[in-house]
Length: 265
Ligand SMILES: Nc1ncnc2c1ncn2[C@@H]1O[C@H](COP(=O)(O)OP(=O)(O)O)[C@@H](O)[C@H]1O
Ligand SMILES: [Mg+2]
Image (cartoon, rainbow, N blue to C red; front, side, top):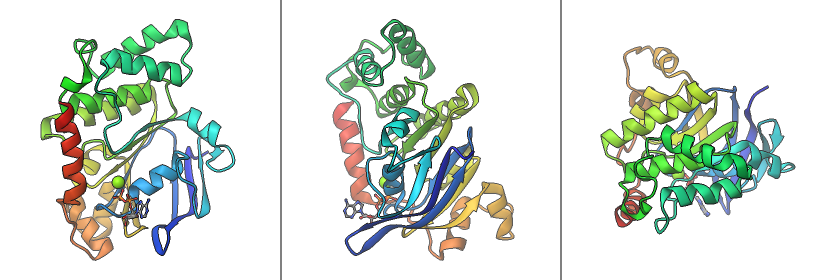
């Protein structure tokens, strides 16, 4: 069984087809990357897979459940770290985790141990009782990963997990994402516009541009398929889409993300 599967998944906003007939099949335990520049449709795909947005047409299953007909079952099977900051800065990390533990129905007698394990996993034990407002961007992202894994979901969705982070914090997040798959056997579905990030992290990637997936496979196989085994994923992207990737991304969006992070820490 594929743990995530989409068939001709499509979403329109008025005249704009933000996601255009996307077919994906992801096996349990994969770290799968949806790559593309800002505006490609990545967040829209994640919103449909996490039941936050209904497809216009086509269908998708997560954990074997249909996102439209069985949304409650899908939500039980997933964790989700959205693109923008989602933690409460006026609470401590421990308090944020406790709220999520209750929200996700972690049994009362397991909460303490589960929270401690999550804090340890992302290396935030020492900072657990500090107000999140004072955290760095990297610490906040790690806390968000801890929140999303608290109920041991089968599939974790991470939307642009490292946007706005410095290179060191970014690598720490990569390590944690890798361990989620290796230690807990979780399937990780992430989006990124950093090609290098996908290359390091993902077993397979889908290259998305203007709503369509134009290539899908292991990074090395995609490079080989364009006759350039030593290529970067940026070159692979350019090959399949006919466009040079705007590596800066959408300035407004990134600066907004960074402002939120700066304000909170
Ligand atoms: N709620 C919305 N209403 C109208 N257009 C939207 C909405 N959300 C996203 N879009 C448009 O859909 C396209 C895909 O957006 P998005 O899924 O956020 O892409 P990405 O996450 O790859 O940057 C963009 O052109 C964006 O402007
Ligand atoms: Mg996005």
